[in-house]
Amino acid sequence: MSQKSVPDDLLPVGYIGLGIMGAPMVRNLLRGGVPVHVWARRLEQAQKLVADGATLADSFESLVASVRVLFLNVSDTPDVESLMLDEGGILTHAPSGLIVVDHSTIDPMRTRVIAERAREAGIAFVDAPVSGGERGAIDGTLTLMLGGAEADVDRVRPLLALVGRTLTRVGESGAGQIAKACNQLIIGETLVAIGEAYSLAEGAGVDPARVREALLGGFAGSKVLEMHGQRLLDDNFVPGFMAHLHAKDMGIVANTAAGLGLDLGGVERVRAALARALESGHAYDDSTILARYCVPDR
Image (tube, rainbow, N blue to C red; front, side):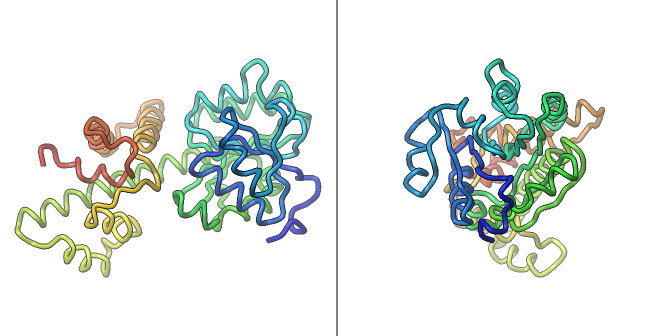
């Protein structure tokens, strides 16, 4: 897709959050011919993207005021709340009609509050968390789970198609974040199951690699078993998605479930495995490491 496929009334775009996911997503927007303005508290992060064709904003305030669509890709709920709602934040400086697209993974219920505050200020807010890890961000093959007004989601689809392959509007504001919470829950619980299965195989003197090979051809086969199951066999924990971030996300899952009066026991098993992994010094390893810690005292 080229810039010609992106309506002029969406340009230029701005981007805040230039880390392991944000930077390659910016590069894919640039490859699509989209003018991207960037800003970061750490100037060196932004300067790397300027070398790839991005425009460095003079300040946070000028970035917000000069773009039609503003992407956020930061770590946690308080970061988004601060950027959006604090005095001097996005709602203070945004022109009427700005669309904010939040790729962060944050609390779904607080997302609804942020979206409502944005609407009151004449700003559209689309929650658009992603799945696919750093590789998906680099390749432009991410899965995007979208929440927000249908018209707002449809307007930004041409931009989102430059960074993702699967774009699904799940529902109104917060629905994208609910889908992402479900994604993290399923991946986490599947990793626990794989870790337990490998422990069972090894305990019985059976090669877990051969067990994985057999299971991939049946109903137990999954992308998690295919990709992360191999990571475990290879002891490859180079991060595509860091364990401490998965722990943060599982906290969001647990808090959301508690707020809805749901007792999700599997969630706590994932959180316990992640806690043991983090306590053992694996915070910045790939979250696949949790499968090593799902069986206590293994």
